[in-house]
Structure formats: structure tokens, C-alpha cells
Length: 350
Image 1 (cartoon, rainbow, N blue to C red):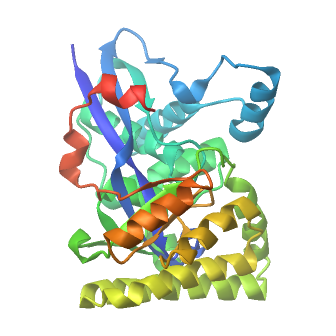
Image 2 (image 1 turned 45 degrees about the vertical axis):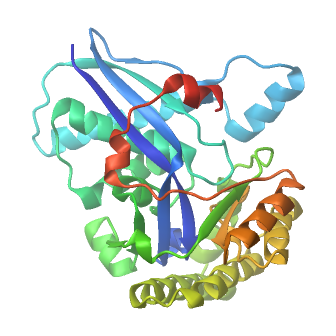
């Protein structure tokens, strides 16, 4: 019986986001502490097994209402189906024979939900990786994130950009240029892997109680961008410039320039997005410790730089006082995708 396993990691948008959805530039990295593991087992019929994101049991009416407001009526299975549909259509369009073998798909996830660490795109990217291995199909690397995004955006109506999917397909640290003419001509951006050793000391902190659907804020800004709102269009160009400066600083080994760029990224976001006070507080507390800070995604998690172990300890303690958990992320490599899962240890804490 054929069995295939894949893994996709959480990601943090480091510089430039959210300009990935607006023909901008970003730097993002994937990290190993949180991930999705997905398994395809050969079976008589196509079958999708519910996972944790497909909750059907609730502790109270209040929890049911809160979960449905945040997560909607569908969970991870719809994402597996959407990716599978587009994968099969891609094979048909490119005259790729995959035979008649069916599978049962099952996933497990320990990425904190809806705090901006890209759990949904991790489910989708893990599914695409598994499908390619299961059927022996090679989709060009630069096209894989676009297929994953299409599954979420076009099939499921989720407001999203390419950054998260690129980070989870490429792994490590990736500089992404989504210049409009090139993107519209090729269907993908220009992606450059950066040396993880060139990164400064980074931390990630998240509030497990700050679950928030990210598409709401993006829909409002997207509408203004499409209407050529001067402030929004200008801000997206500034985001891209921040990412380019960050990339150039890393390549040149000028890590002292990075903290100011991280802070500028958040300050610019603050100008055009309606930021919840609970999310703003995370950044304020981190900066109060001398660290730089910005959102890792759309809120609920922050990423930034710190100087030394003493500052990191102070940062973690201060953020803990407002309910946040702080980690020093290990940047993921391709080899980390093949790590074996100790399910008893991992899922007990998920």
C-alpha cells in the first residue's frame, strides 16, 4: 500500500507585508516549531478525514458562535479538496497521466489558529506536496505557490496573497518581488532564497486568544487599492521599499539596519489599517523592552529582532504578562520537512 507523508511549516512575514497582495516585495521565513503533517494512504475511494480545524464538538453555545464567526462553517477538509481539484485539473491541462490510484487524506496541525502564522496555507501547501509525491508529478517550483493560492482565493474565496505559500514551498528565508508586469505575465513572482545565517536575532510572540479572521482587513484595503486610493497605493510602494532595503542589508551583512526597518513596517501598516488595540499592545510592549516589532501576519502574532539573551528574557517576560508566548524560531530547511513526527509529544501540546 502506497503511503506518502508531507510537512509544511508556519511562516512569519518579516518585511514588506502586506504588499505581496499589491504587487509589492516581501521577505518571509518558515520555522520549525509549528507545522502541518499530512498523510496520503492508498485506498479504494478518495476520502478526506476531518482534522482539528474541522471541529464539530463544542463546550458551549458561546464557543460554537465564536468559532463559527471566526472560522466559518467549514474547516481544513475544504482546503484539501480545493488543492486536490486544482492539482487534478493541472495534470489534465498538462497531459500528465496519474493513473487511477485513490487515497485517504489525513492531516494534523499544531499551528496556533488565526494568529497570522498561516495555518490554512500550510494545510494547502502540505496537500500539494503530498499529491505530487503520491502521483509522481513535478510541478515547477515557482508555480506551486500560485496553485496553492488559487485553491484558497479562487476556489474558497479567501482573501490572500502569494507570500505565505512561497515561504512554505521554498522554506528558509525568501525575498519575493511581485512586480506587476512580471507577475501577470508568468503567474508568479521573482523569488530569491536568502542565507538564514544572514538573519539577525529574531523572535516570534503570539497571543493564543487573539484569533481573528485576516481577510476582513485585507478586503477593505484591497478595495481602496483597486480604487487607486493615493494613501494606500503610496503605502504599498513604501512596504516594497522596506523589503528591498532589508534584502540589500542582509546581503551586505548590515544587520544593524534591520530593526529600524521592522519598526517602520509596523508604523506604515498603522497608517492604513484599523489595528485592534490588543494587537497594538503586543508591539508596544515589545518595543518597550528595546526590541523591534511588527505583525508576523495580520495580527495575533508579532515578529521582531532583539540584541542579546538579556533583552530576550526581558521581552519574553513582559509579553507573558499580557498573555503572549514568545519563541526563538528555528528557520526551516528542506531537510526539516522529512523529520519524523513524534505524535505523542507534538499533539499533546497542540
